[in-house]
Image 1 (tube, rainbow, N blue to C red):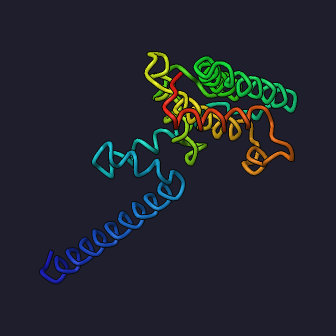
Image 2 (cartoon, helix red, strand yellow):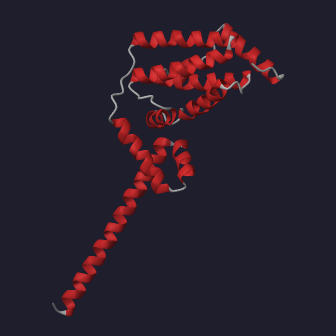
Image 3 (tube, helix red, strand yellow):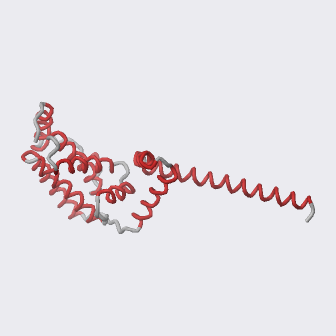
Length: 210
């Protein structure tokens, strides 16, 4: 092989390598943008935990692959109505027994997740799975579950318990596929639970603990 041929081969190989590098960078850039757009704050959270962008993105992709294998189903109209009644009972219970209400709320979230098709073997797995379909509200789940864990040890006050129930409610309505505007609409007349929440918030600010 003469020198001219070798030069042509060398240039061709270099060009192929350059094109490959450009394609690789473009693919990775597109992947990063897609994951950031989809997971939002959850993307940043995993980056902070792993301290490595490649590891974080690989983890998020594994979550997507795992959840894609689940048989996630919508709730029937009857189930949605039943769960709404159950949640209303939890909120009403909060007025008289905040600690038990938070425990019931935690259990109800797991029950709805199972009904939809999400495995609930442990907290971290459940949170990771939820982040795929509900990336904007999974933070509510984590915050509420952290309070619920301390609640079981008797380490939280009424205001924190109220916050936990508010966090659970945000995720609960998403799981029931209820628009946020509907779930947060103010009734024409104050309900007992709304009055109870306001009273509990005022008392907790004065130092009252459950």
